[in-house]
Image (cartoon, rainbow, N blue to C red; front, top):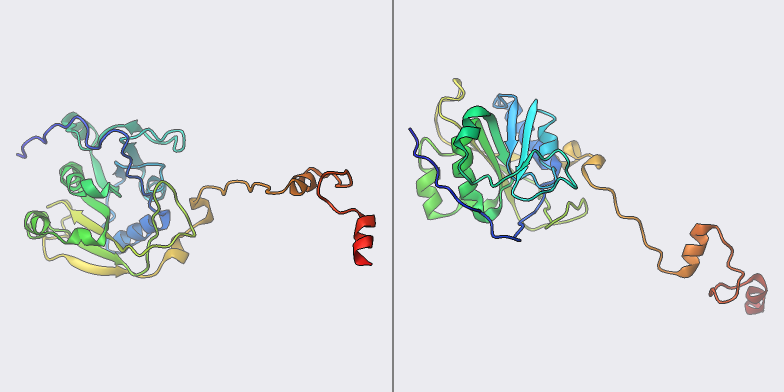
Length: 257
């Protein structure tokens, strides 16, 4: 039997919000890969770093129940957030009462290993983490995760195209020089047809055009008029009054001469 997880009062310093929302098309790409391999088993998923719901929403397209939680209260933007809690706290009664098949998230990079440890213990079928490519490096992770036959990933899925992430916002026009991967673990014995074996490395082919939807992004803020004449035009008023900076017909005639 696993030893209980150590209790933490808080996993993230107060006021420190490492929020880089994942474009929903990148989550749909993962779900497509899992589905094609026959691994998208179960009806319940947990997104424990839900933020403003950009990953929870595409998960809800495939799972009957998606539990969305975060250390921060984002319900003013994402009303479907179920709870404000620290995922890294030990919640044994919660895990026993309400098991989830998959735990899928984009964890804070500095806490990704801790998120994996907790998620791997709690998930019934599997865990999928959206991570920077360099997370595959590291002597300690190689020894404790990647070389352990019971904990090594089942899949490493490298995006062939870049997935642009921006701090605190989702921007369809952003670009990036950072490479990202999905790393997927299956719990031992969760799927009978999936015996333990070597990790499969694969590429996620360019798919943004396939999985991206205009409704994924928040509406653009209204433009601000920079000139008084533009405001008058929007209000349907003429600019014949003096002092507006507009040129009247008679003045324009004089300029033409």
